[in-house]
Length: 435
Ligand SMILES: [Zn+2]
Image (cartoon, rainbow, N blue to C red; front, side, top):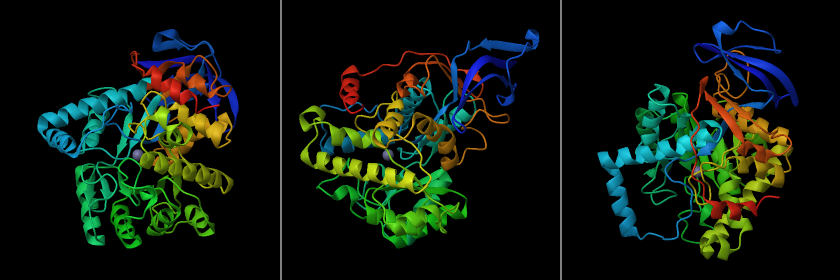
């Protein structure tokens, strides 16, 4: 049956205004009409009275993973245990357990208002499987755009467990073909080292792929219309990734003139420009918390701090230079749970000096454009899918109102509310980072 959400205070982030509207959703879950409140024939519609509550398009998390809860673990595991765990995951039973875990995390994000997730790095293409389960309506879930395994160099970031390894342009092309055959939407490469598996200070931004290899990977992916996301944590890494033609830079690093130009006009990228997606939530705990609080070792602490400083600097430069900027929180990484994407917006407001209007616009409309789904979601407009969240308080006044979501509609369907298990100790620690 068709639905109407009556008396909504729609937050129009593009034009920075509030609109009192009724939103009509047709039987195909598409927004069919938006009007000023009017008397309607009740028999033809299921009426949901929002009583003036604030309404936004569903949030989009443009950089996430689903394989882990994000809760820091007190124990660290040796090589042998990790190897054993990996072999277990590889089995059919292991993969179905993994899919259940990923589903649980995706559901938490949905409960928290995220209706679309771009997942950039998972094991065994279980992200492709999960995307299909949700897409076929076998189960309600967020829309997923997925990349499967990372593409990395031998021994590079995420390798060997989370990455397909390659050491030449042609091997890189082959791994692109492998992932595309599995049905990915994006290719994720690791152009530099990362924090999670760094063995020395400075490894996080150290170059791994060469420009030649990145160029080959991008060409191969672009040939079939697939875009490339690059994990990059140093200026030189950003430079060769942009020159190679990647479509999004994840995390980011300080820019010089050449880099600014290449972001805004990148002839080798699929759309002619490249976007930046900083992930503050993943880096900030390293930079702001004392080692005793975060429990990090010196290598992780130093690398994480550097990555955070790089990403905040590059985000500020992106905003100054009109570079397309998106938002993702790197959920599953240490300290980044699936229920607190609101913190990423808060970081943009508190530390990158954005207005709440602007942060909300990035998390919806601009993210949709960057990940390539703006024709279907990202705003409340006739013809778009009814991915809608209803809030009891106004997030423009306080971004933390995003934790007070009263209703989530996914494809026009009301998502059944479930209690999300939180980690109060972690939340208290993270609260210290925000103003
Ligand atoms: Zn990530």
